Image 1 (cartoon, chains in turn purple, blue, brown, red):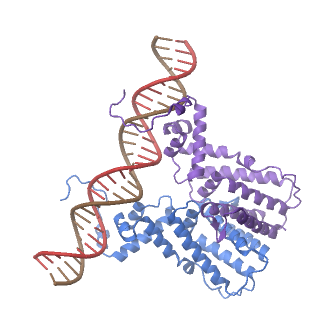
Image 2: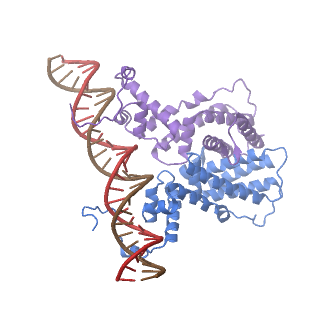
Image 3: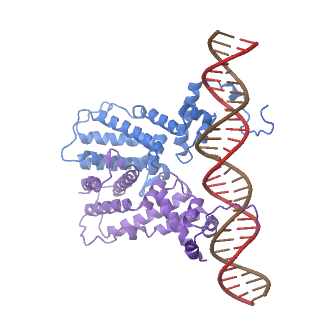
Length: 219
Length: 219
DNA sequence: CCAACCTGTCACCTGCTGGTGAATAACAAG
DNA sequence: CTTGTTATTCACCAGCAGGTGACAGGTTGG
């Protein structure tokens, strides 16, 4: 008996919980990673910390230090894990659709990205994090995300050549910026710059506006 | 002598500091408000708290409770104070320019808003806060900001009628969303979606892309 | 069997945060 | 000078954060 005046900090486990608690490092590492992603998606980066992750994973925080080298390493692991986001969330092929023009492509990419981001709370939190802080952690995540996105766009583009005389990098940056801000703002407050974004119908209107903008430039 | 074992918590004031410390509630209130705005602009909402504001204002946090009723009241005061942002930062007239079409107007508004946001760290922090959290505090700020912005746009619009057949609310929301995200992302990481945004020249390119988009819809 | 290792848990430290009750210092009026 | 009011500061509390060293117990090798 180590100490007589020890204070009980954690609730006593029920038999059901205790039984599945086997010694298994790989499983624990996965549990920690899952808990971290879930926590980040649920509560955002505000209350994201070692203690909260450990609580969510149902293990001691010491293990996070051991297995991931602290929060930084854990975030980096999330970033690495994020590389598979695009191919999980967004269809790589065009669904049998023939994209004849660059305008067709960009319209489709914009709408796909909008939907994917809207459906992924974790990704939204990361984007919000990106525009709120500039730490090593965030930069790692940001880099992983932008790399995955750029790769996806490149793949989708195929052999289609961008139009001459238009700064496609600039224009596309504006379009994707708009999508990201629309989705973030809507997820938090249900609107953006006076445009209500709650129901499916609201989003259809937004999509139409977006299409209109894309078509306005790329024809 | 109150307590013998008292611990010194604050540094001893130099004579210079002590001399200007007069009893003046109005001045102290202003100092607190200024410190809060400065702190928010400098470090962002992450480390924004009662203690930090009090430290920045050089007074005890108790005064923040007394004069503003806590952080919430202080943030609300910032919001109220924010109403004057638009007319301080953005010219209300069009600078002798004749805005003949709705496209002229929107192009000018977009560029003005871009510049104003780029020049105002406090406003940027608030926008970033808006997309990161959904608390009472943020909602207050957000409301004040959007109201000021909407009023400004309305004033600038004058008697110009929007074009028929276009969902101007939707399209404009997309445009303003894009501007906000571009500026936020650039302020943090110096780029956005592959577009570098550091030098004046970079921003000129972004402005051209933006103009192109506006003109693509509104002609 | 013992020794070495690995997974996991625990108690504790320091430092900060938000929050509060009481004391103190300056000033004004009687 | 005394009394009351107002502005300001102080000391302290509970709670939670990140971080660390020591220990318990299963697993494996000799």
